[in-house]
Image 1 (spheres, helix red, strand yellow):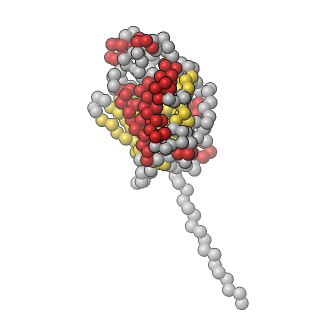
Image 2: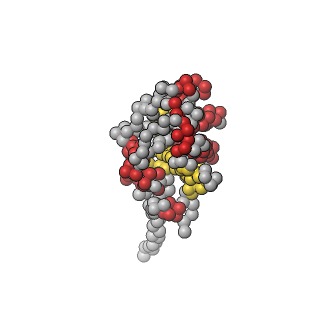
Image 3: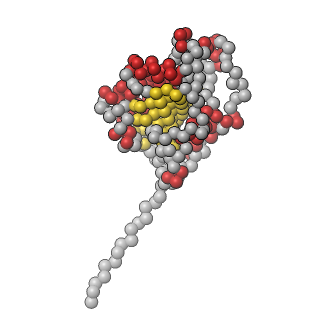
Length: 277
């Protein structure tokens, strides 16, 4: 039996602004981003040196079926989601965030980033995010959902050579749940809904907000207490339950992930004293 680990925030995220990339500004992304702006404001008020510097990637535009289900309004139809949300938050919250109206592909290399938040709805997109991060040392917060359930998983990426010597590293979503980054398991039917009613039959109106709240709470806790005792949450609206993912190698092993074992400290040999004749 192993003991749970208390994860501590890296020192550099206390000493300078968080460099954050959000991938996806649709259902979950449009719910996460306003909370991220609130977190930025709270961090500044509490004395953090810089808060959050954020870049949002999304190549999609607002459709009529997005209105009401996502954070958009009738006048937004036809405009880029990323630009709309970022411009709105910059104006209302005084941020200087940036929108990139392009799709993040696996060929996009993400450097100089502390945290990547994935708000995507396909396994292929999730894999592209991990491919883009590569071996950069960063957090990856995955926010995924289905009809009325989903998961929020905070993990860490780092150079492969360092992983074996970092037993306390938080495993990311692709390590805990490989199926969630397997593009071959994506559903064949990705036809856009022709009406809001059709869209609501496919997905709960509440699930994106429920996932965003859990993601917000993880990040707030990480900033406010500088530590975490759990690194993710399962959300099931049908049963009304949320279940945490503890930071515990034994719990990770139940998902099939084996954390590297910490090196045992070698006992120092005592030097025998000699007495001269």
